[in-house]
Length: 130
Image (cartoon, rainbow, N blue to C red; front, side):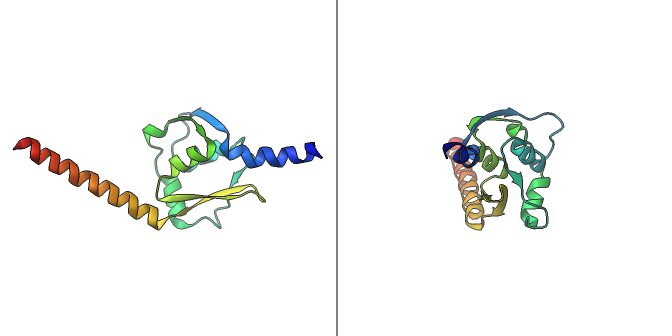
């Protein structure tokens, strides 16, 4: 009985598995990086027929240089890092699929934070110049 539970337990925990990865130069887009991370995880990316257009657009973005090396961190955290705060990771453990959905609230929060940071930086520059 214990051995029959092991594969499911391993799969369930696979998104929390610690990774440390440097992507090969052939990995040029966020989508390629996501697929690369999933290769040995037991999961695969959901089919393109169910992936939303916002997610497809995110996958087509160039892989940022800062994300060329990730870790050590959990696989879930690495996937979320690649997608950014505007997207939430969707996991289907029954079919062993993952995808992302745009998180409008998260996107707005990220935009507000970026705007506040820019405004605060502008204020500091003006104050320093006085």
